[in-house]
Image 1: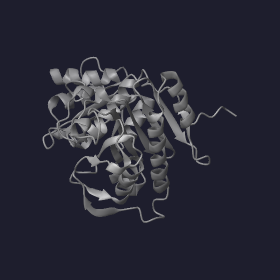
Image 2: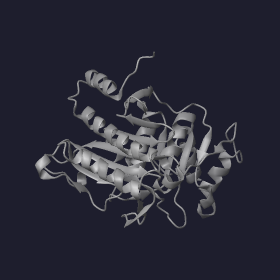
Image 3: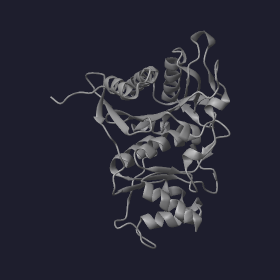
Image 4: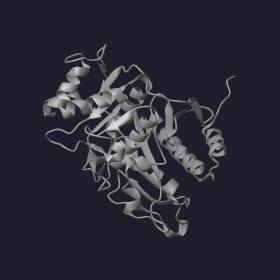
Length: 331
């Protein structure tokens, strides 16, 4: 039998390499436990009362799904009492999440999208959780908004969980990307993808092409280029693959090679995706895997957020393909 490396053992080994205190490992254990609880509910959809929408509208103007509310509540409850965070922010919450004073305040900050792609829940399509971790900026006590409105290049770790045919947790501290698969009988996350890198030859492009008529001409020309038109197109035109769950589309392109983009358009010039909860954490992972994330004009990770729910155009994945999108934007 091949040697099994659990996420716990992997994190302990990294602690020894870095001479770390162990606090980050404890944070990751808690996130992994949240993932197990959310995975349990996704596997039982249709057999429990977790399918369907609530009557609650979130700050994004979207009706929350029942599993949205569950995932958000689990992550908040599991991480607010540990004393390891001074502040948190969720895509589902209007304002920053204050840590109760009786639990104490730690040196880390957590931002997260509890359930990305939740509109796909009732049709049994893969969904995911996205998270980013920062060291606090304030000196002590309860954290404030300055701890949360940070450039992505200040992240100390980021990751996502994808709930699909199997449940996978993928994370990075900026030096390599590791993937763990939840063993269905052991109940443990086992290292299954030890050093994830974007493949040299991309296969796919992922975009909601139904919006094409609303895109500006550079984005339309870029899309035609990937289909084999224009000057010096890819030797083999890329295939369109689009799930509509950002985590699922990003994960496929990370493993198989490709680019995901959700540009601004006439209706939403700033795009649809959130800088703090989605673009920055996934951009941090992409960079660690040899890829790149851009707003179409420059690095996502260099952008300074001015509000928690700021939206941004996103081009992410294979570095050469994302740089090509920037080249089209400059023409």
